[in-house]
Length: 68
Image (cartoon, rainbow, N blue to C red; front, side):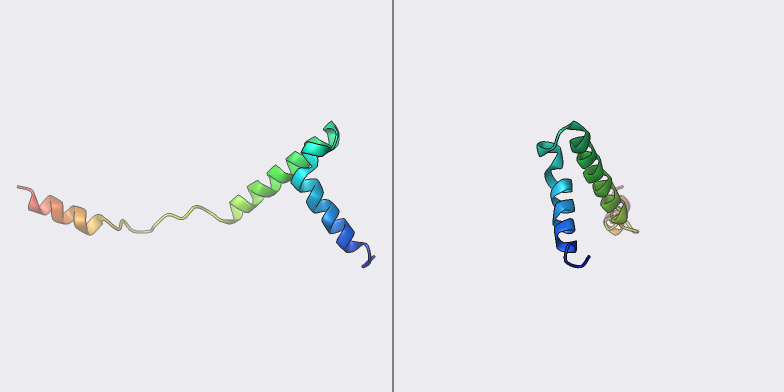
């Protein structure tokens, strides 16, 4: 089994990377769906960064206090 593991991994990577362009419709659609699922999972792992504080808050307060 160890002998075939590199071939299986390379085949899986090729299937995910470009299977929808090369393979017929049922397999091509599965490849595209697999790639979309992996992309969505990876995007979900890294949430969008939002600062906890407003970096311009001090400046905005100074401007409001300076205005008559």
